[in-house]
Length: 130
Image (cartoon, rainbow, N blue to C red; front, side, top):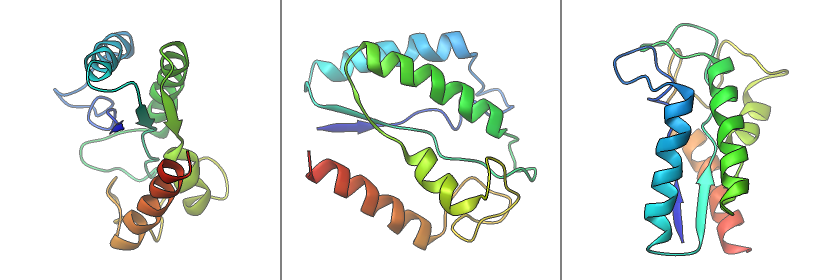
């Protein structure tokens, strides 16, 4: 099994930004390259970002757009998905948007040790029960 995720840097408003169409093309190539090594691929959705400005700036709307585009692609190329976005968002927000989360470093896209532990539990459970 190969587990992969790309997106957080691709959506940032920096020189690392990748337009959505190019992102999908890049991910199609990544999936094809990974497929050479195993038929068992798992894509993990990009996790949510707080509304408060982080450096570099990212928006929840962009996370959703890129995750939606990847959902279509992974369905097309038969890649399993672990929806870490939904898992973490239900723990961080009453709705779709939030300013801070106890499982995330304040004003940052990275998580606390507890946040990473919870994500590891979800990923492990989904990988080992397939």
